[in-house]
Each structure stands twice: as structure tokens, then as C-alpha cells.
Image 1 (cartoon, rainbow, N blue to C red):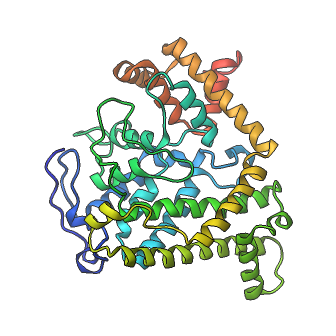
Image 2: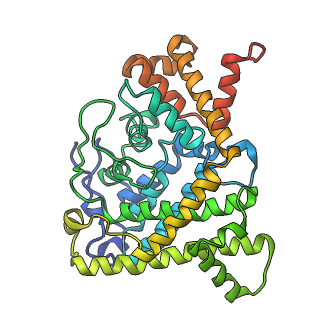
Image 3: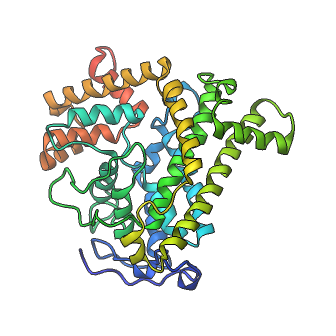
Length: 391
């Protein structure tokens, strides 16, 4: 790693953060020399992520429902923005570094494939004998190498702390590990706990999943409020809405239930995390790294009710025949495109033909497909396999 860059921290970073928060002035720096400016390092990281191609493409990547199924459903981009909003709120209440939290939240899904987890499953299977595929590592690979925006270095040249957070991002859909599939070894110590801001993003990701999947599931008609009533977390949210607003109905009632779900979970996280911080006597970032694993979390009671709701969503939404049918179709799209490009690489755009020669054919094809949006993948599929489609 190159010499860390000296930067002038924002005023709030100087004395108003908790002692165990990550201070911008203590950043381990960037991989390449980079001129400082009026922003602190994490603000610059946030801005670089927002202006990246990978971030813009999240608008047309699947969350649960494929983009063409309707304009009202979440996409990977709207999910990311909801995670960032929740994560910033939690960070502010806990006295953490909001800039770092926001940068990590906005970048946490940059490695996702088209068609959500079905696309990732297909690429993981196709790359099993060629180094593997995992969307967190793909996100790190994207910000380190695939984004091309600066003349002096590849990637976005993000800070050590944001890159470490991407590598250690951990939810029920993630499998963080220390083995990069592009060779070598990551510089992060996976025996140490993630930064507390990283853990806030992880828990915010989980909260966002619950709330927006309930909302989208109800909107789609694939799940019903009557069926959700048997889940304690949903029932509690509904009681809160009734106590506050009485007998409201329709879409406003649904939106308020989603709002209540978020509030219930966030308040529980704040209370439980404060207890854990106090119990473990954390006084510094070093303390977090040493004994801060699973520092940000839910109380046992809330974790149980959350798990019950998630199990319901798994069985009744994610495995609904309409969702599964699209997921299987999407996996087939990815597999057939992958095999076609590998069989004849000259079908790749010129820049990816060059990339494939540099990183290997399979990795180059994988990178090309992983970066696609849903609609771009569908268009490419037609160009590859429909004889009358213009190329």
C-alpha cells in the first residue's frame, strides 16, 4: 500500500464521535497517491461510488421482482438507498462516523449480478472450477479494478476502511472470506471484527430486506396481510399503526406498517447495541477490532421474531412459483450467455475481449455478465440467440 494521504478531517470528526467510532483522520489511506481536497476521505469515497458506472446500473438490477414486472417494486438501487438511510440514522444515534457508514452502504451491493441472487447462483456454479464467484468480492474487484475513471490508477482508489468493509460485509445472503479469486491475498485481517460502522450497514441491510420485501410482496399480491398476522413482528407493527392512526386502510396503511417495521427493528438495535458496547467496555477502534464481533445486533427476542418473519417470506414470497419461475429463467439466461461467450469470445465487446486476455477468459466473461443490468442481459440474450435480432 502506498503512503496514506494527509487529509483535513471535517469539523464533526474532530471531537463529536464516540471513542470507538472510526475517525477519518486515522484512515490507513488509499492504495495509490491521490490529491486531497476539501472533503474528508470517506466523503470522497461516497462521492466516487455515487458517480460510478456500477452504482448507476443498480437501478436496473433485480431485488426480488425483475425490472420489467412493474415500476413500483424495489430495485437494487432503491434497496441500496434505503440501507444507506437506515444505516446513517443508526450511526448518528450511536455517535459513529456517518460518512464512512454512508460510503459503505452505497457501495455494499456493487458486485451484484443481473437477476438478483439467481444470477449470482448461476455465476457461482459456472465459475466453480475457475476461481469462484461471490458478490462481495466482486464488489471489491469492481471498485479496485473494473471501474475506469481516473488516469493515474485503476478502479476508484477507495480508502482501506471502505474496501475492508466491502470484503467483510456479512448478512444471511453473504459469505465473506479472505481469498480473492483474482490471485494473491487480501490485506485485511479476517480474524479481527469488522468496524462498528460496517456492522451497522450489515444490520441495516437486514432491516431493509424485511421491510421492503413485505411491502413489495403485499403490493404484488403474492402474500396477504391476513397471512402475515400470525408473525409476531408484523402483528406488532400493525398494532402500532392502529394505535396511532386507527382504522386507516389501503396503501397508506401498508406504508405505515412498513414504517413501523423499520422503527421497531431500529429501536431494538440501538438499545441492544448500547448494552453490548457498555458490557464490553469499548474505548477505541482497536477494542472494536479485538472484541467487537457481533457488536451491532438485535435482542434475542427481536432476533427470534425477525427470523420467523424471514422464514415466512422465504417460503411464501421468494419461493412463490411466479418468483421461482423468473429466477429459473434468469439463471438459464446467464448460463447460456456465459457458455456462448466462452465458446466464441469474439462475440464480446472489444474492451472485454482485451480484459479477458488480461485476466483469463472465464473471469473476463464473468466480469462482463456480472456488470450487466437485467434489461441489458435480456437484450444481449436476444442478440446472441434470436436470428432476426439486430446486433
